[in-house]
Image 1: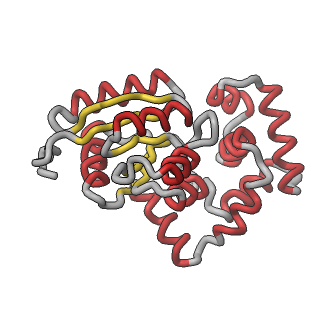
Image 2: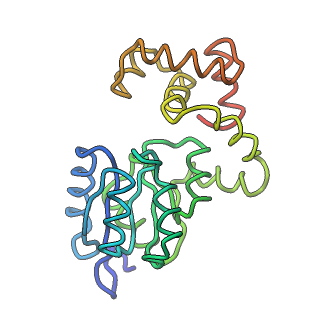
Length: 227
């Protein structure tokens, strides 16, 4: 990949997978603006089944994959594609709003070659796509530490997974935001749910994790590097 982001082999074919249409449009606009000649957007997908169909049909060089998707999430896309034997040369780059350790580690263990957050700029994303297409592993700086800690044993991944397996995906989202200090109204706005629903999820989280307050939850999440 040259300094201007172009590849001597031609543009990298991309499939954008995210369940928010507005975000997909934003990524498309960024890539079309910053990645002219370096990337070619082949298709978009909003859930696991659409992603499987798009990757199978277009055989992209890189899939920009959100972690949380209807139908099982980004890891499920990679698992099913690997099981099918289709598109073995396709590489996956996670592009997610989540920077929680369990999401990063779980996605890399699921087969992704990199993980970047949605604060990334268009030119940075084009560069990351190019590097992943060439076989490199790419991480946002803070997230690289999670991966190193997991493989060095500093994070007990199995114990974290066991705790989180008790929670539904929505409960995990609520848990992370509450642990970061969000008010219930802020969580409701962020996740497009009612305050009452946030309260219900929070009660369930505390019960499942055997905690008694949001203060204990924040400490629990911090100890496991989930913030």
